[in-house]
Length: 67
View: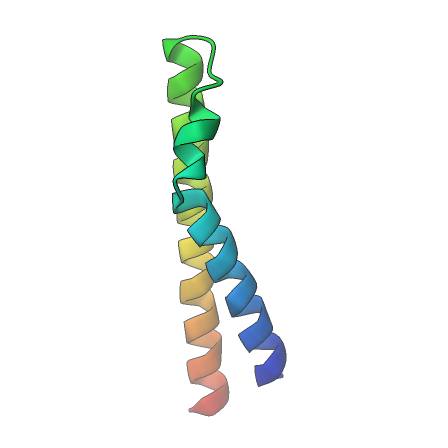
């Protein structure tokens, strides 16, 4: 079970890293106007919060299993 959790954690970290990368700025350049830019920025922020929350959940699960 811990191996599965470790794999899931790595995938989450990779996704989070991708959302925080420089490629984000490149992608945001495709926004057609200010409102669309705001929407995309908020979408990225939501994704970051999602993956951070999932990583916290993984830590809690690991603590319960190991504790």
